[in-house]
View 1 (tube, rainbow, N blue to C red):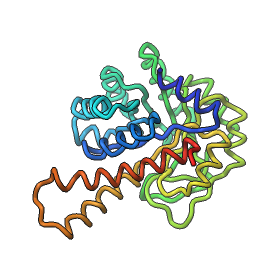
View 2 (view 1 turned 135 degrees about the vertical axis):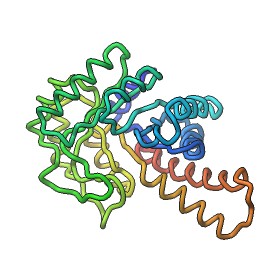
View 3 (view 1 turned 60 degrees about the vertical axis):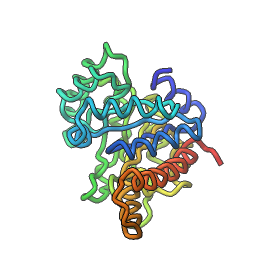
View 4 (view 1 turned 180 degrees about the vertical axis):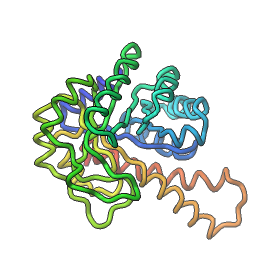
Length: 274
């Protein structure tokens, strides 16, 4: 089943699909083990930075082979890319989904760049995601005037031909200062305007009840990244404080287990599993 078919299925069920970034073999294993245990599909995401760190072919090999070993249904997505050359390389490597992020441009340039990528990806028949509005990066704070404008959504989706739309409604990448608040009224308006699969970036740190409210009102894909990096590093630091073991094959699995447990909880939230 293609990713767009799964997204359509969860959208019709008022559920969402979890998309989790991985950074190495260990974080990928933790994410995939959670997917396998709950028998729920998941999207594995790679940013340009992670691809640069691991190498494209190595990263793709991890993303393709770990799910086979763990008997999990996963899809591979290129996250937050603004390099069309890299987009083409990822398409050639068989990615199921790609994101072109020109959200820092004005809407005319965003449409122009996004439309080029949609045309490029056309023959590959994959999910294409773009961002309208601006979801702040880790070192920036939320600005209401940069939220997605419902009035722009129809034009943007129709002129670009995207299948998925990341929207800015109060989430951010990185850590939050205080409890995040999502603009559900704005979300409802956007949902009425487009049939594109709506994506919530920056879901790490958003409480379960707020996430589920967003999903019930139109969010179909939920991205997490910060929680994975943070938990993996904290787990390793705690483990090494209490152990002199130099065998990483004994140490890393303990951190993998923590990632698995966290991702299981995220999957249950977005899949509406009690």
